[in-house]
Image 1 (cartoon, rainbow, N blue to C red):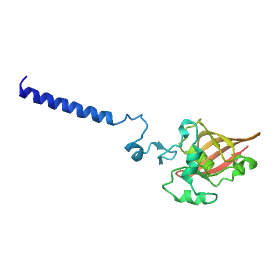
Image 2: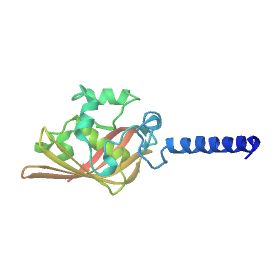
Image 3: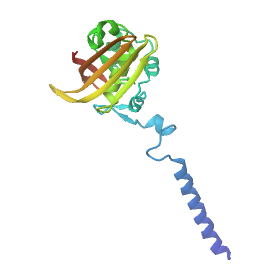
Image 4: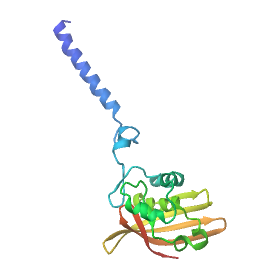
Length: 194
């Protein structure tokens, strides 16, 4: 084989090697993002089109209450509404303006914390219609099952129906409601009924 034939073959093999290395380095579009894509590409689109970095396991049918509570950190009680409403960089959708007792029943509703509010809000934000989202609040012992319902338009606001079942010991509360998004990721519970 002559030297002139060998050089183009070497160049061809180098080109094939470079292309195959690049192809192996990029994960397929359906693969979970762990590297650059995880840090730079949003991969959860919320109800209003807002991009979310995490779904907190909502799409798998389970809300990661602990992770949401950790993200919310020191935000407690009435401060939730003001912080979430003013924070365009929030990482968790939340419900605001809903009295816990009216939402799931007074006795069980007293145990509703910010992690639970985040699970409800993020389920409304990224959950699929007809999907059940389950979680347990380890501190209160309350088990939740939220069924994300269909869309509603209410005075120009984007709204979703839902059913929330809360169980604590031998007590159970089931409420149907409508959550309306006042801002991307901020859900007001507009109506609830037994």
